[in-house]
Length: 255
Image (tube, rainbow, N blue to C red):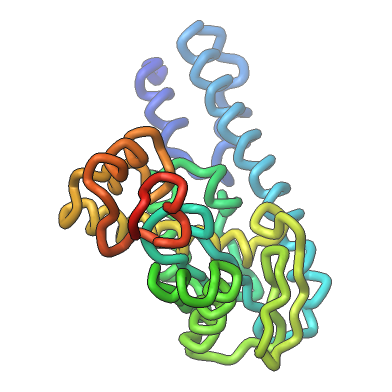
């Protein structure tokens, strides 16, 4: 008895990528419109998957270039620009045979995808580290130096010491590990991309917690960046304890 269109559709949707080619051969002569549509949809899904594998392979360029290194660590930060909250740095050492797909510059991913990838990265990484620099510290030593401090802290929290750092654009002072700064590295290195994701998710979660304490500023939505709502609230209520005094001089006279 022939399979129904719905049965075939369900079978194609449930199939793994490695199973699809065989199913395509099985159903290629079935001319029912619903089957043709289901096969076409599955073919597009497989093509998208294959393109993602190719993209990720290109994203491993630097990891392959320095493959002689035992532990390659990607470093990135988030939160240099906001008016409030900490700057957060991430450090990630991925396994040599890393098979995680969809890693990218965290800014290019949806919040849902970042959250999904965060869990996968934390599970599969050889080691991860997070570093923070507080608003007070940012005001004290400036945002660049505070970013370096957060990066050094992230490195220090790794459970294994890397023998190479792939950094997003910067060279971190006071670090005795070989460094390779890469411009727009979070979109060019899978390790840096992974670091940008865990740093972004960590900071976003923290800003959502701050929103519960200081709800008038809208931190859950703006994450401390200078949105119109945030600036209006800042002018109305003045700064709160997590605002960076050196960043808000244009908006408030005190602080």
